[in-house]
Image (tube, rainbow, N blue to C red; front, side, top):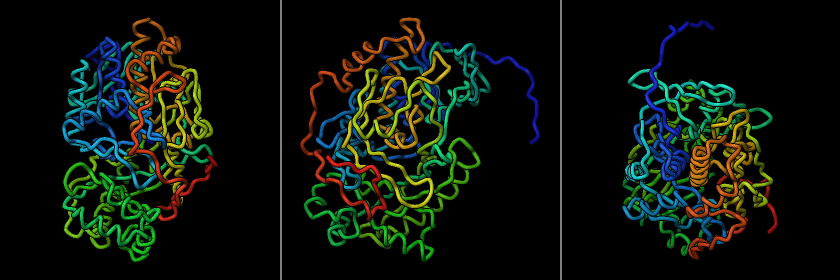
Length: 495
């Protein structure tokens, strides 16, 4: 490999915030709002021109998942504030029952209105926003990240914060700072595949419901008429045999997911489709991301043609738009002060330093092959330890979101957007506490952190917190059959 040597140059420092949040995805939103509300000068840097991350850029929908199988809401706080505002503005129906994945709830939303709502929430909290900006390097002295280097249309610049929360989704700042990390499966490093979400308009929803009743045998768990009709927003999963036949005939690419998965959005006749798929992609390598973008955009056309041909109500539908980037499920995971395991996820483990709850299934789209691990959501409610957010060897940086310290299998649960928002809120409060007390991220008072999160409306285990049960979201399906969705559960346990 050939190299060039850059000229030595001085980089202007454009900001010295107390707290820098890197990345405006779900974790970054929670972190930035929480930090700014705590009274510290907070700056949020984002590579796109709007906040939301996978919520808005990759068009991932719905927002998963806020409730356990008993209908109790275990993700609250800033994430729930966001949902409430979307409901008020007609951008979401709120939390509704999910007929697909054994989830107690799902939260479909309109990504375009969500962008504006998030901007308003960030501005109201007093967060300084800097869009269209990449963090490209970090300078570290004795475990302290003293500055990060950014690039944008204004050139190469620097920001010198006192504390940083890395919410890039890929632990970019932690990696630039020399923090150790792993990628993918422990044995071979392979990672979950990438997907390009797209939205389809012009769907005849009444005709689709009738088609589902007539073809229930093609759908996961063969839902009855009442289940199909009472869905406030349609959740559709199944058709694996027809998908395979389409692959065999060449109608669909061989890497397309082995089932059709789609969700009705809070806009007339519009659905979000989660069916494209490509394996062997490293989301930290631009060459791989480019290959994924090209392949998956071709798959979008194939999948839409399949929908028009095989599913009633889609005959006159059209592709409305696609995500502005592919959705990446997994890249780096930091080596933190603690590693969360799948046993702790499955066994509803609580921790003295638990700072957020999760209840989503262990959901691992196959790095190889076709079968997808899915354990069913809501069956366990576990806590995420603060130590999982603290990267080894660094004293003023936290990581929040999917790259926290966890095993590959545990990561299959913690990676979803509602859980990431809760983690971000905890990280924002934690760095604000460190800033107020002029201490390292390991020296904050964990009991005080938990107390503050509870006072902000967040849900934690082993605290005197009133349950918020929605009877419409009590999970009805019990250990359902995932064969028609190519799901399997190697961790099935008796209740």
